[in-house]
Every structure is written in structure tokens, then in C-alpha cells.
Image (cartoon, rainbow, N blue to C red; front, side, top):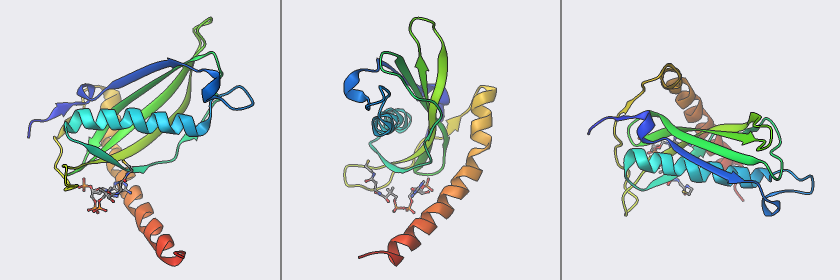
Length: 165
Ligand SMILES: CC(C)(COP(=O)(O)OP(=O)(O)OC[C@H]1O[C@@H](n2cnc3c(N)ncnc32)[C@H](O)[C@@H]1OP(=O)(O)O)[C@@H](O)C(=O)NCCC(=O)NCCS
């Protein structure tokens, strides 16, 4: 399978934050941000695999700063690492005050997607070529995140077994 560069999966979405997306404090709902993160990350994974994908997991989402109504929010997603059928995607959420131009990273997350066919069978994904120093750094640190995710999945399975009703 032909390898692909990180930039081939890069996906960007910009939008104005409007009142229907906000809470009583005039800032964006966390759940809405998470939904957008999953949405844009799935497009980046789909672009890398050129196959249907499902979300296998989302690492912690840290809401570093509130996103105010009236500001612009810009999300960027790209594949950072691949294993056999799974892909790690990094998403950053940046707010921009359109008057001052001030930009701030408000949230970020790593997600993992698995490529599947129409019957749900898992499919191998193309290798990834990191090019910039930033991409190489994310690539070289991915295996340790993968190991932590596998450990977390084991714990989740144990919890599900222990507390099933
Ligand atoms: C995600 C899913 C396909 C994994 O398949 P599985 O048979 O349970 O798990 P496997 O152990 O065979 O793992 C398959 C791949 O997924 C990865 N994976 C599975 N669970 C994972 C998790 N929690 N986090 C990260 N990667 C995970 C594995 O590392 C493996 O990747 P690899 O092929 O690159 O090595 C399956 O659990 C599933 O369909 N879950 C529901 C997905 C869903 O409904 N998502 C929300 C809507 S899109």
C-alpha cells in the first residue's frame, strides 16, 4: 500500500461561534466542541484510509480556555501515526478574536479511528510519512500513547465486566 504524508489528511474547519452552540455563560458548550472534534478527526482519518472509519477511542479533551460567542473557532486535524488498521489523529481547537486577531489554543485531543469495510471487517491502512519536525515529534511519541490506550482499554473492559447490571 502506498504511504501517504501527514498533510494529505490535514483537515481544517473555521466557523463563527453563535448562541445556539453556547451555554448561559456565553461560551461554547463542551459537548458541542467534542462533537466537532470527533467530526473533523473522522474526516482526517477517512482521507488517510480512503475507507469508512469508526471512532475506537478519544483521549482526554482538555478545555484549556473558554470559547466566547462571537469569536471564530478554527479546528485542525491530521493523522499522526498509524498501526495496522488504526490511525491516531490529533485535533487542535483554536479561537480567534476577529477584531484583535488574538488566537488561543482552547482544546486539543488525540483520537483513534479504525478503518472498516461495509460489513464491518477491519482493513489495513496506508503507512504514514511524517515530514516536518512537529509531525516527526508527534509520530515518534505515538507508540507510547498507543501503549497507554491499550492499558486503558483493558481497565475499561474490567470495569465494564465488574459493574454490568
Ligand atoms: C473499534 C473496534 C473496531 C475495535 O475492534 P475490536 O475487534 O474490538 O478490537 P481489536 O483488538 O481487534 O482492535 C482493532 C484495532 O483497533 C484498535 N483499538 C481497539 N480499541 C481501541 C481503543 N480503545 N483505543 C485505541 N485503539 C483501539 C486496536 O489497537 C487495533 O488497531 P491495529 O489493527 O492498528 O493494531 C470495535 O471495538 C468497534 O467497532 N467499536 C465500536 C465503534 C463505534 O461504534 N464508534 C462510535 C461510532 S463511529
